[in-house]
Each structure stands twice: as structure tokens, then as C-alpha cells.
Image (cartoon, rainbow, N blue to C red):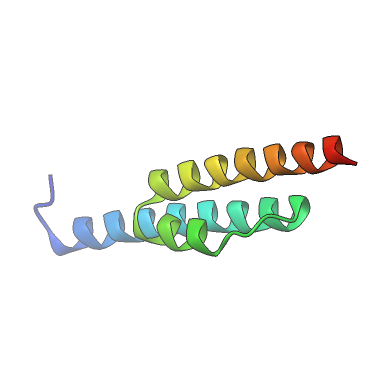
Amino acid sequence: MFASDLTIASAWLHLLTVDLFAARQVFQDGLKDGIETRHSITLCLLFCPIGIMSHMVTKVIVEQQKLIIEDER
């Protein structure tokens, strides 16, 4: 599959582009919803699916905390 240096370079370029795009989406979603995203962006840049899952879990936790705070008022 990776017979030449050009193939390896293009595969790396593709992976980095996808990771950066996913990290950008996570960052913008965090800005929109007021959610901390540093850990998710770091994970996106290291291993994209884990970063996306981390952001989804963080988003659910923050939403649940907001609901609990609203119920206490």
C-alpha cells in the first residue's frame, strides 16, 4: 500500500487535514455552546475519533450540569 514516499506523504497530508478540520469543528462547536475544548482538540490532533468522542461526552456532561443548575433555581 505504501510503496513509495509520495504515497506516504499524501497519506500523512490527508490524515493531518482531516485531524485539523475535526479539531476546528470541535473548537467552533465549543465556542457556540460555551464548552471547554482544549482536551478534545488535543486528542483530535493526536487521534481524531477519540477527540470527537471526548467532545461529545464533554458536551453531554456540561448540558446535564446546566439542567441541574436550572432545576435548583
